[in-house]
Image (cartoon, rainbow, N blue to C red; front, side, top):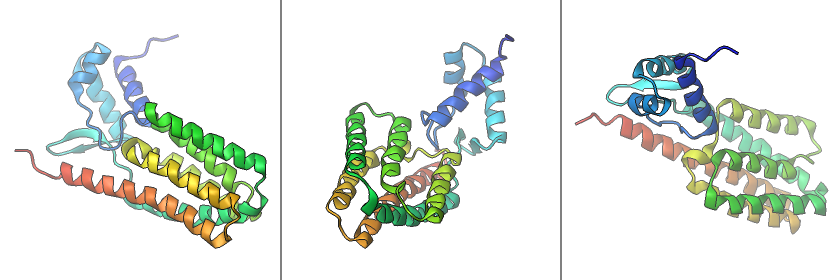
Length: 225
């Protein structure tokens, strides 16, 4: 097996950390520490960063340098708004058909999410989050709405979204909201109330992410002293 070039090693390290959420959007990629970690000069690291920039994973800002690309705000917002609408509807339509076993499974998943807060892994949390919501919306009897929900979640994966990696405080709030939505389903609350609760749950994450994006953008626009 051929030995990887130094540039390829640097590329794979940074790319894996971007994909996992370890390097969150806005994270500064400083050449020297990365080169030192890999035991190489800054030249192959710079080459790897240029490759990541060409692929859209990294941007270069004046007075800031290379940083992990921010999620395209408009695209993220449109996807989350759409997902809030269709997932809210799917959750409400599923409510009457969810079994007691499925409700117990959803509660167990949310308990795992709660336990994970102390040793937080945003990527794992995001996977559990999808697993939890899947239990609540997969019984949707309308295949067209369900297809739109699946497309929304898949679109979030394309956007490399792990919202909880850069708004970790949102994770604890999310678990608490899961409890409330689950209780509404168990109590057979009116469908419209379940739909609105599920929709607002998704929109709260959107608002938290956008607030973070605006804060990060404002910081990067401040000229260096």
